[in-house]
Amino acid sequence: QLEQAYGRNGALGVLAIRNVPHFVDSKRALLPLAHKLMQLPPSYLQEELEDPLSFYNAGWSFGKEKLGDREPDTSKASFYFNPLTDQPGSVEDRTLYPASYPCNKWPTERLPQLKPACQQLGTLLKEVVVELTKHVDAYVVTVVNNSSPEKKVDDDSDTTAAAAAAATSQS
Image (cartoon, rainbow, N blue to C red; front, top):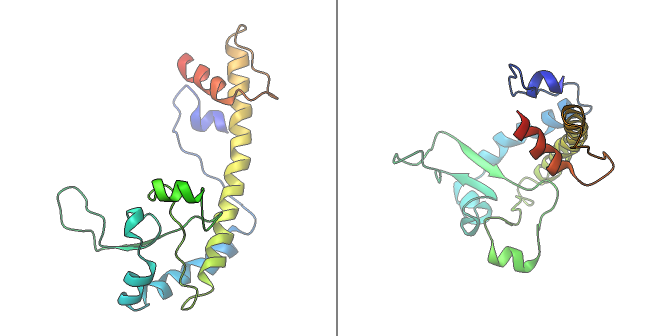
């Protein structure tokens, strides 16, 4: 099915993953919390959950994004978080690159169930992507090995990037 989604002839470039165990339950636990988050007092959201140092790449963001030269987009709000760690990178990374390594900002005292729900769904999605990359890697190795005898790739080696580059250049 990867060939159908990403193959050389008439590929759509779309991949859908279905029947992920626990996805529906995790999503159902998280989505109602979005409404509860938005109902928190605006002063609390701004003072406690906004992160201007990260350019709003963590925590609450409302009316900070502009589409082109237009007014700020106030038709939606966003809540950004890293599902795998609350403090990514090192202290030095976070100091030098606050937009790339923002710390999570959770409403733990007002909405304590948000953090575990976000982390559960985010971790599940990461696990699915890891499994997907194994299939993509195997597919790329097969394409490269079948298309050019001089470009053999050992599927136990750490050459996935080289295989992907080779497959792309042959398209």
